[in-house]
Image (tube, rainbow, N blue to C red):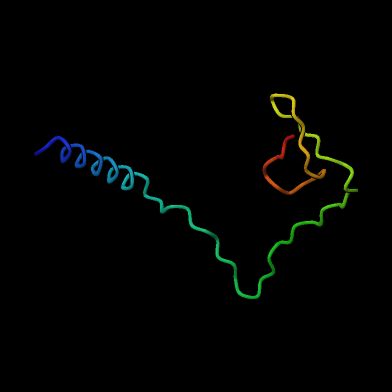
Length: 77
């Protein structure tokens, strides 16, 4: 057996041991029943366009997006 085949066999054995030991299936997404209402996010308060987010980066720059933006990232200038 080559070194690669031995490593592959060890990896497969370790994987099989972990999956057998856990005994629980992987997390599954919860299914939504047909006709059920989906949760709705609350409306975001509209701010004037003059107000900026103002988040400060580590190097001192500030975010130029509008205050309360829903984007995950900030836009620095």
